[in-house]
Length: 238
Length: 258
Image (cartoon, rainbow over all chains, first blue to last red; front, side, top):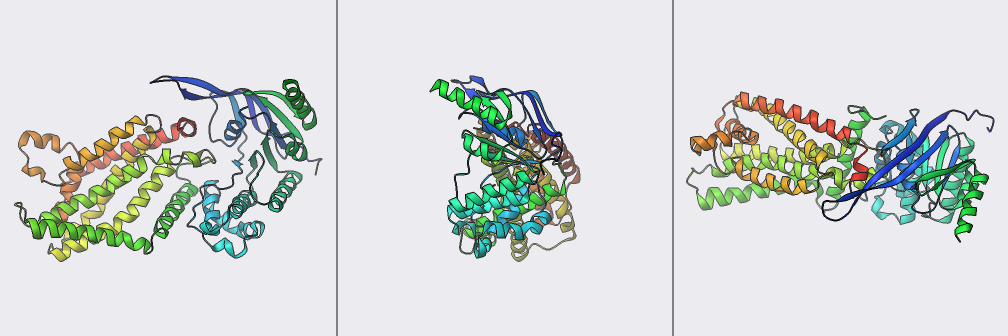
């Protein structure tokens, strides 16, 4: 599968900046640039890692890629792909069953009800919820809720899957299964963006990486090179 | 990727409303039966107090007079209260997934409307039992309901679009709703006002809406069409502006709400 052409960028960011308003006393506010100057290219079928310290602007970057917010300067081009953040629960309601929540989550991701219903069997089997799937979400353990959320997001398969940090929820076994599923996605030429401050996961999953520091993209290239530069800077600062 | 009248948009609005209503009804033992029992109790209280105890001077029909105003005004008031803050209330959700923001006030209005309809049906039953006849003028009722729905959509969209940027505005809206409650002729008839006040009274579209509900339901008279149709036309303009603003600031809301 590695010889599939990966030249087409699906999302391109050029010198993107975005600010938030911070309150500064009575009736006064100040711009805070969460991202100052970020450039990157996301190609079809690649796993792109975004590495950087906490507060570097990684979550804001994912929200931009998902089309939740738009930049204040620079350019963001999307070649018409649907990018969705992998979240554990998208507006789930405790009183509804796993099945109904799956439909609700799918509709929120912009996927039609009939498509969700066609994939329902895959969601049921991947989630390993068994009989619980038709019981109210309120009866689930937190691990089971996470499994439902991940199953919906993974099985509904958006064009670009955006993953924030490590998914430190759910039991180790299910986490391993989700990671395997993501590796499977990467191998089957699907596109993912993985954001983390931890180089381990990015090394494991990504072919290319971008290093973000204080709202600026510093290096973009093969994972190993970028991670070495990042780790060198961490060591320098002690 | 999303467009306004996309079938996915409508599916989401309907399914989300269904989900919210299901969730609401699951919180109590008898669930959706409350949507019928609550208005029945409400109406009984007004009937007992105003038609049996007080025997108000305006004639003994004060209870139906009051109830028509209360029930139809409450549809509007509850929609604006719920829908006006709906964009703010869903701040967490909109940071996880892109959704056209018009979804939130639309879901709120549909939710309130689904609960209004049984209350309105009970009101009609009450009026028929009370002794008002079913007349041909009832045929105009759907038009009046539609015009009120348009006003609700217009004001709720406009308020929901602006409140996230100026939260202070919400305090003013809340006060405005209370003022409107007292100024829309729920407790008195417009004709009982002196001439110079009548002019101002009838600038309020709800004065016309409520008066015409009473004309149909109590007097069996056809509505006074011009003010109703003008209100509907104005509401359509409001809906256009409100949905334009919600679309215009679509990607600004997730970072403007703290």
